[in-house]
Length: 493
Image (cartoon, rainbow, N blue to C red):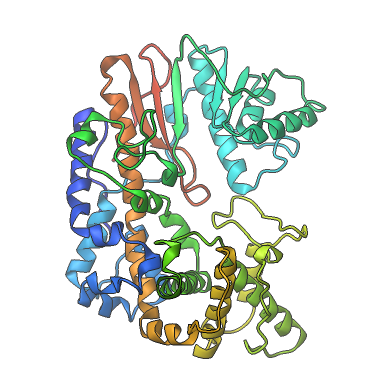
């Protein structure tokens, strides 16, 4: 059961209508959007959620909860809950990959060879293959003699454009280290290719730009009018239309816009349970800070040691099960205060992280091994085991914040106080995460409307160019001058 998006963004008027519909929908749910999950226990956030929704979802499987951000409901849910999820979904910009051959003339994606693909994971390789083919097609259609890659990172896209598509490229990034990495990588590739790629730059003056192709990501880093003091063009809102409805996001909403329905759907039961459990640990740790270290502030960042703790625990279990046909959580590893000793893997899976010892943790392989064993390790976790993990989580978090644990901290008392509500955090977080794709849609529509408001001097289109299962941030906004050769006819429904 699902509602299809009924809105269009082919014109400025249609885009603004869509934006206003989103603004009207999200206003009653500020308690979900603007709240911080770290304050779940401290502020008793579950009390703001409809009791019928909580009761219903308390009986749902983890798999069902993980599908809520994708707009998937169950028939037996309360009508109001189904209407909430389905209406929200109907306001989200569709993510099915567009038929790019119909949009871009001479679109010919090619699979990168091992030389150009060095250092890329599956996601990055897919993005570079598709986007480089789009840029090459656009450059050819518009007879452009140079390509500027703004926010080039380590130069993956720029180098493929230069070496594979024979384009003159200027790569620009704010991080000087990325420039050094890009240039060094280019020198290695030159041993196999002969092409022109200009040195990594920091500033560029260009008399004429024929087209812009923009891929959105990292919405949490957007500057926002009223929330930052940046003396530059704000990242949100950009359009006069959004400014006219007095719609603001705030840091919590910008963070939420990074949540991907595709990633939630692909987590699986064990990973989903781990996700919920770590959020419970972090929210309970906030109670420790609030009671014993009020000077710390509202919600300080303590890094990803929760994931490292869980993975080290899982690794211990797996090794034990392989050596003997039984396993318990009774022999939990002692966690050092310096959590750099633990393996860490980025949540997005965009790269394999390496710790200070040079040990690489492959989380995909880890979960594969877990699935080979009968029963869920999460289901076998007892109350005592969870408390033990929580205490280690807190000790590690305090060390990360430069705080010394004292003997008078009653970790056990705090955990016992929140334990009856731990199961509710997965429900709350799933409902809240459902707003992620909607808030990203709002940000994208704001940027598109900004371009549409420029009138006839620009033609603009928004379309999904990547496979969302591989790259969830898959929407491109493309603007060109009317005489350029890119088709702007694309259905936005």
